[in-house]
Amino acid sequence: MSRERPFRDPHHSASLAALVGGGPRPRPGEISLAHQGVLFLDELAEFNRAALEALRQPLETGRVSIARAQGHVTYPARFQLVAAMNPCRCGHFAELACGRAPRCAEDYQGRLSGPLLDRIDLHIDVRAVAPADLALPPAAEGSAAVAGRVATARARQAQRYAGLPVERGIRTNAEADGALLDEIASPDAAGRALLARAAERLRLSARGYHRVMRVARTLADLEGAPVVGRRHIAEALSYRRMKVLPEGEALRA
Image (cartoon, rainbow, N blue to C red; front, side, top):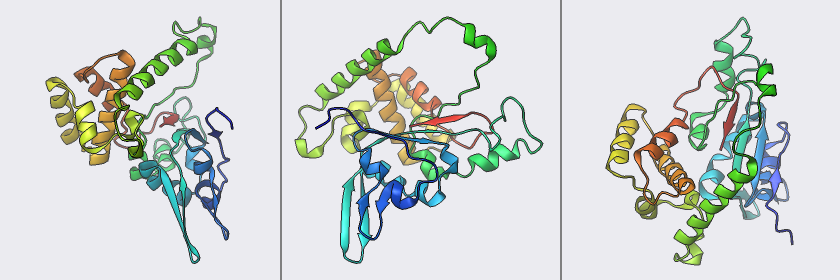
């Protein structure tokens, strides 16, 4: 038995059955093979639209159900989605716009539906690396230091949920919902005020509202803060994409 978490990176030509599972004799797809691990979708906008839309339910429930005439099969699918894409088809919108800019970027990014984007917690625009940046010294905080902070934050979460019934299957903030989420992620007064204003002005869906709370709780855990504060809410809100923008090169979940 392997103790390493799975990492799956299917090609963007993968069919709906290959990605989600199915076929005449149902078999698990890439999302189930990535259970408790990472599913990396490079060139996200190039995937079949139906296959991408089929990710919506597993991202919410952590499982996928396949119905056939002979019966139903349910596979586990609790995975972390990491996706990347170019800002437009030519890939040079931010540096060298084509003659159709910005419509070309809007059309290309518009291939991703709002409900799918709403299920992605972190949206990060990454600009191309300039030649001058290649000569810069390494970052002050290396990957090992970041991994240490992440491990410490996960240990805090494991301790937080240790007293819950095993059947609830909650081990991280991402799996908390309902009354439990309100209990562990409710911000202080300043944070509540900011979240309320943002929910109204940015028209956050109920799903988006709760995802902001989960991300803010994790940011507080990374910092070692016992209470979610205004700064954690502000940073979590900065990762939400309210509309398709004609800039940027990557989306991460």
